[in-house]
Length: 360
Image 1: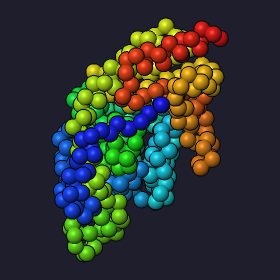
Image 2: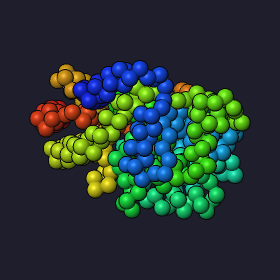
Image 3: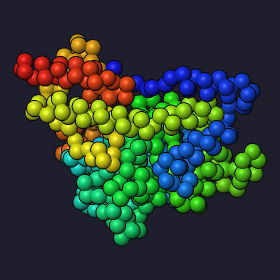
Image 4: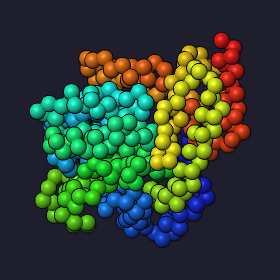
């Protein structure tokens, strides 16, 4: 299997204990505890959890003042949720190519894409990585151009910048996802972190019908229903307790993959600063991708094609050629990435990859 969530007895017990209390299931004390754990781990002042990681980006954009017609720069290599999150309220995603080393936004191409309508940059830390140009370059650019930096850190819980800040805390607001494949999961779910009191307050209102306070029906702003649940929080709390051990294991798996495949010239890994960042998937470019996938599937090994260039998706169909994004669409492959992989399983996977290329 290429990826699967990892739940165990602790999550089952936590849910059963909560159900025995006769709770209402909607977000309350356990959700607050889960939010606190995220805030403490990332070093953020505020953490607000919502029903999924796409809505978290939408709320982040709305809370910082992005409106219909505003342009938001997004990478052309990312999960389609990134541009969809602002398309939802008719803001305009502007696609920019990424660095070949990290798959994060190429800052020189970003500079060329800025117009009078640009309101924000949505920086995706691909697979927990930070841009080769450095996060400060993006912070300085946003300050110079008076535009907002939003961090789509969906794949980056457990990853840090070299200056010690957790990825997601450099922007005005950062977003995480807890969907099934992530390093921790609540099935679906997302979280926003920010050090800005006003932005945090806006997010809390936006996710809860615009209520002026919890449990009342006084609405002085427009809002929606994007709340979490206590059942998800029960799982999330137990998952957070396991996060650090998973961070360690994710890095061990990456090191073993790269060691075993270092002499296979047809397989290339992207730069990964393991002193700071934690790989989520094990992403590669490979030759003869479809044939390799077929061979591995025949040997009970699951893989997954990486995101293709978004501008060429039928949903968007935006003109432009983005060299790196196009290349990933042709050669990008995620190897088995589940945290439960044993060393013996990784050795088996790598032996089959080596066998395939030797047979060409």
